[in-house]
Amino acid sequence: MKKRVAGKVETIELMIITMVANGHAMLEGVPGVAKTTMTKSLASTIQADFKRIQGTPDLEPKDIVGYTYMDVDRSVKFNKGPVFTNILLVDEMNRAPPKTMAALLESLEERQVTIAGNAMPLPKPFTAFATQNPLTIEGTEPIPKVLADRFLMKISVDYPSMEEEQLMLRIKETEQNVEVKKVIGTGDVLALQAQATQVAMPDDVVQYITKLVNATRKDIHATMGGSPRADISFMQCGKAKALLEGRKEVSKEDIKFLARPVLSHRIAVRATGGIGVHGIIDGILATLG
Image 1: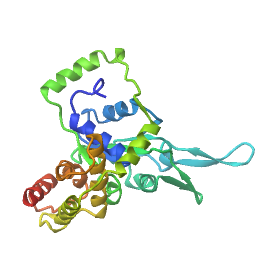
Image 2: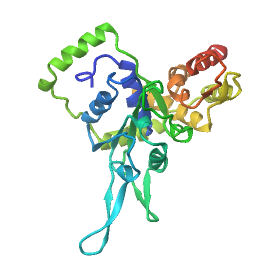
Image 3: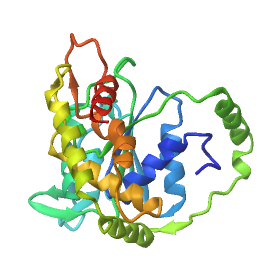
Image 4: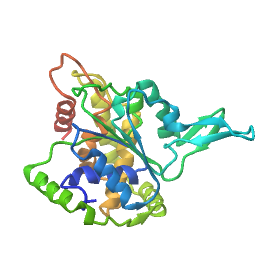
């Protein structure tokens, strides 16, 4: 991936953790900070099917899940939408109508699409990455919390440093001559996902996760804290991180590392609080120690 992406080491790590944890992630940042490039680069290293959905104001549910039609022989056929893939990129998700984005709910949670009463499973593995622009950017809509909660993490993508920006120019300069090899296949991804479930999670880590999530619900600056899905996301991502680093059990440091991406899209900040979501999370981490 680094043949195509300058810097962004932590972001790349979180994306790979998401895939090994068998989940989905949102990438949030201003336009032009390589959110789409990173997703396409990850897909290019895996022998897997990759499809892309562009978030636009006129996007319809059928553009995501597909549609039925009557063939020339008068039989009803189903044309599969781009969600039937291994790696899905939903580009600029918060420019699409919330009603249309609701079509993703079943796919993200149940890994299936139901059409005319028939449930059709999605390919395995299935990981979705959704990019979104900050709400201060023109033409964006807030992502409903019920949809955002289906994503394991929201990964913030900041502007690059000057050194990374200079490296980016050199990468772009020679991009056509650089070949990104597919180093693993879908079978390898499924094997990693299975191995991750076997990583141990000590009692003290379980207690730390529940204390952390419960504290978000009681914080005076928040009107809504993390749901039980946050606990599950910590478990899945923590196990994947430990596996990728060659460890047999999850540590508290793993949970602290994952706190911002796992919690930031699940907390609703009080309008008069005067503190951002990251401030809430950092304050809780400092209190828990």
